[in-house]
Structure formats: C-alpha cells, structure tokens
Length: 394
Image 1 (cartoon, rainbow, N blue to C red):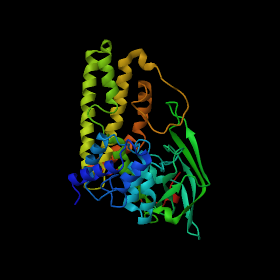
Image 2: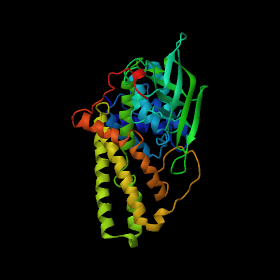
Image 3: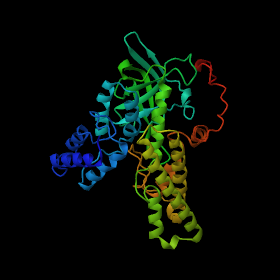
Image 4: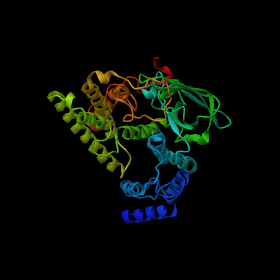
C-alpha cells in the first residue's frame, strides 16, 4: 500500500536520478510518468501507482520545492480534466496505453467536440451522424461549435448520433477523433475579447475506426456524462491558495489605489472575498470527495458559483477603476493556447467572464441539475423523453 512516506521517497529518487537543473523538461516529465508520479491515483503503468488521489499533493510539494517542471496543465486542461478520466473509465487497455501517456506529457493536445449550433444547452439533441461501414470504420458528418483549442488539438473527444430511431439520449456513441484526418476543418470564432479562443469544426465524411470508439455503441450519453461531470469540477474547482483566481487582481487594485475606495465598494469587496474563499474551500472538499470515487452532480453547483463570482468580481474591478476600467489592453485577433484571466487587464476579465455562465453547461441547465440531482426536487416535464430523435420537431 503506497503511503505518503513511500511517495516522498519515490519522488526524491526521481529528483536524484533526473535533476531538474540538468535534465530536459521532456525527459523529466517522461521519467515522472514512468515512475507513477504523474497522477498517483491512476493504475500502475498508466502514470500512477494506484494510490489515494489525495496523496498527489505530497508529490507535487516535493517537485515544486525542487523547481521541477510541470506539464503546463492550463494548456492541456481539456485532456487532463475531461479526456483522461473518461478514457480511464471506459477505454480499453489498448486505448489507455495509447492515449494517456502523450496526453499527460502534453505531446498531444485534446479538444471537445460536443456542442452543436442546434444542440448546446440541449446537448442530447445533437445531429452529427456516425454510420458504421462494412469495413468496421465509422463515417462521421456534422458540425460542432464553441470548441476550445481545436486549432491546437491532435485529438478530440466526440459524440455523434448512431441510431436516429432511438430517443435523443440513446442512440449516441462516443468516439476519439483524430483532428488531422481528412474531412476535419477548423474555423476560428472571434469573441467579444477580440481573440479566437473558440472554434467551429466541420466534419465531412471523417473516417473513424471502431477501435477509436469509447464505450459501447449507443451508450455515448452515459460516457459523455462522465466527461461533463469532470469538466464542471475542472472549470469550477480552482486549486490555488487563499486569495487566488479572479479575486486576486481586485484585491491588489484595492490595496494599491486607496483614492478609489468608498465604504459601499468596501462592503461589496469583502462580501465577494468571503464568497470566493468559501468557493475555494468547497472546491477543495469536492476534490477530496473525488479521491474516493467519481465526481457527482455537486460539481455543477461549484461551476455555477464560479461563473457568478467571476462576473461579479470582474464587474466590481471595472467599477473600482472608474474611467480607467473602460480601457482595453489589446483587441488583436489571435488564437491563444489558453485562457489567461489574471495575465490580462480588467477589461479582458470583465468581457471573458461573460462566457463562464455558458461554457461547460449553461447556468440555467446547471440549476436544473442541482435541483433534480442534488436537492431531489421533481424533474422538469419532458415531452420528448421517449420520442425517437428522427421524429422530433427541428
């Protein structure tokens, strides 16, 4: 049984064998993965040791103290937070060994092909089709939208309709799609921030081998729910310390600009600071719950809080700065590798936070999930629950 002392010893042995100061980043990360210190709760041979998830902090603390490089988790967040746990839960042994190592090392970036122009909040209404040929290869045609990092991604997690005669939550199958295959076209979507962080993706007769199917045919919605629950924890569950995240630049501005302070603004700042700390601690508690099982619907509540707080905090920051808050640092059209809330100005934070209540599930949908699956309230009436997807009005 691997405990904290054993992990500490293993980490120090790694550092002695691969000193960060004289080892290339790629070699160090590869050695860390092979030593089972990438994500310690994963099985042996897949970057872990089958240890308790909560013990990852022991490894991380030792590595941070030694100045060891990380795998740039913000750049590969979709892979780490969404693709990896889904592959671990539903993938074959061959799929796990093929995809998890390059995913964690950051050699292969992932994106998520879920939302569509006609299937956003109602994701189960998706219309992208996948048809299995006699050669054991699926042909996929459709359009996806709001796809973060599609312009960087080598692989995508994809859900498509494989049986239109089934109700919309059934007849969906989950695939791993090679973004470099013929028929995959990525187009940028310029946002209110000026950037094109999101994309729309067109799939035209894209061929996906059945070996890249995740889970059973027609069971894609159940597989996708695993992805979505992990996504919401990943988005809403900050891992920073006290006064981290969006509250940090607001608190800094308050301390550095005393001439802007008023009693009313102070009251609002203190309220948001406390709520941000409560959200941080709630996220920590949720991560501890993850150590003993899969994420549940509670992550939806955390993501709800994250969106509301980010919008209120960024709004107060702009208000605190007065006329200066109306300035914007850079409208250049670019396609960034990650979302950098704290590395940009207050105008960017204010505009970008508007998307927090849409991405990863709209706040309206998450309120329904919390009401039904956390609070146990009656479910919302659904007239299309048992109707074949092909017979639904569109």
